[in-house]
Structures are given as structure tokens and as C-alpha cells.
Amino acid sequence: MAQKTPTLQDYEDHISHLFAQEDEALRLAREDTHKAGMPPISVSATEGKLLHVLTRSVGARRILEIGTLGGYSAIWLARALPAGGRLVSLELDAHHSEVAEKNIGRAGLSKVVEIRVGDGLASLAKMTAAGEPAFDVAFIDADKEGYPDYLDAVYPMVRTGGLILADNTLRLDAPPAAGIPRYNAAVARHPGLNSIIIPVLRGDGLDGLLVSVKTGA
Ligand code: SAH
Ligand code: DHB
Ligand code: MG
Image (cartoon, rainbow, N blue to C red; front, side, top):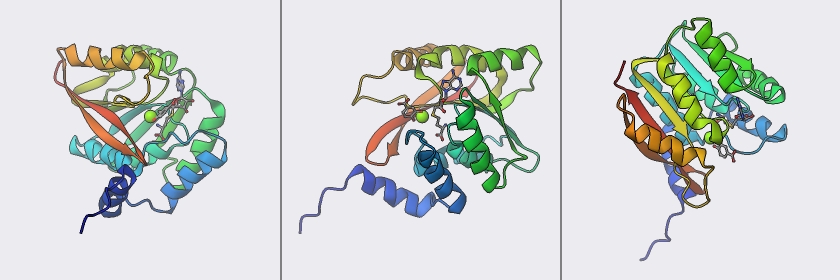
């Protein structure tokens, strides 16, 4: 008997059922982000788990995120940290940051996650000037036109052997912001990065996570 063609949502549900079930804190973080009037653009559960596993795989103790929204991806990332680990998340919008603080608090991660409100690029410049210690993982997920500048700023802040991850790098169904193809091309030719785009499921759609291992100094 012919089977019904599975949808992308069916694949997302299949993988998340096995490997990426949301607990109460994650479910409420997603719901409250939406209730607070923010767009439903958090990473999916399966992409959240991918971020978590990648972070674990490099033994990360320090994570940098650019683009907090309601803190959904921050929870997946911060849960990959050992005791004493830290996630610094940069967010432009003070209202987003407030909602994220609540969601992160409910997940018991207030002492692990620090949100810095302001323009991401300006915050990165301040951190560099202040001698911020190196990060093991950086996750770029803020304004798409800013991606190429975020790459330049973040590269020196990540240790050799660490990861630079970038969301929304495989949108073929809609014209992406020009910053995305520029970011992808810059990463592809970067001599200090070894990279691949991993397609990721987004409910009933597809997007990508560009994963780069820093091989240079
Ligand atoms: N990482 C989140 C989703 C982030 S959505 C998750 O998956 O759960 C993108 C976020 O980037 C929004 O909250 C937006 O306010 C923020 N943003 C946009 N421009 C920014 C900038 N210049 N600096 C820092 N954050 C910015
Ligand atoms: C948008 C931003 C995101 O980070 C995302 O994952 C999906 C969409 C957006 O700005 O449209
Ligand atoms: Mg995104």
C-alpha cells in the first residue's frame, strides 16, 4: 500500500520525538515569546538540540550568542555547559531581553546566562576592548545584514578548535537578506575556517545552520 508522502513537519516530529523533546521550560519559553508579540523565529527543537550537541562536542565552557529573542536557543545552548560555564547573549531590543530573562529564569539558568542589551556589533567592540576571555562557541542569529561584520568581530574572540555557528544560512525559498550570501561566501573562502551548512528543519520549512570549526589562530 502506498504511504502518504511525509511532510517536513513529520520529519521534525520524528527526530524531536526521539532526541529533542521540549520540557516545560522550553515549551513555555517558546509560547511566552510568541505571547509577548515576538515573531515565531526561534530555532526549532531539533535545531536547538543540534546547537546543544555541537556545543557539548567541543567541551564548551563559554558561549557567545548574538540575537537572544525570547531566550529559546539560549536555553538549549546553556544546558550544554558544565557547572561554572557561561553564556553571554547580545540583544538589541530591551523588551526581548526582559522576556528572555523570565524564560531563562524559569529554566533555572539565570546565573549561567548573561544578556547584554545593545547593538551586537557595538557590544562585541566593547568586549574586545575590555579583554573579554575567548569563547568556545559563537552562535550568530541577529540581523541578517550584520552577519559579515559579526564574522569579522567574532573570529578573533573564538579559540582555535572552537565553533562559529550561523542560523538562517539556507533560505532558498525566499530571497535572503544580502548579508546571508555574503556571509556564506566569506566563510567558504576563509582560510581559518573549515565549514559546512547543515540543513535544519523548521516546522514545515527548511533552513540551515552554517557550522565552522576555527582551524586558524
Ligand atoms: N536566537 C533566537 C532567535 C533570534 S531572532 C532563538 O533562536 O531563540 C533575532 C534577534 O536578533 C531578535 O531578538 C532581534 O531583536 C535581535 N537583533 C536584531 N538586530 C540586532 C542587533 N543589531 N544587535 C543585537 N541583536 C539584534
Ligand atoms: C528571521 C530571523 C531569524 O533568526 C530566523 O531564525 C528566522 C527569521 C527574520 O528576521 O525573519
Ligand atoms: Mg534565526
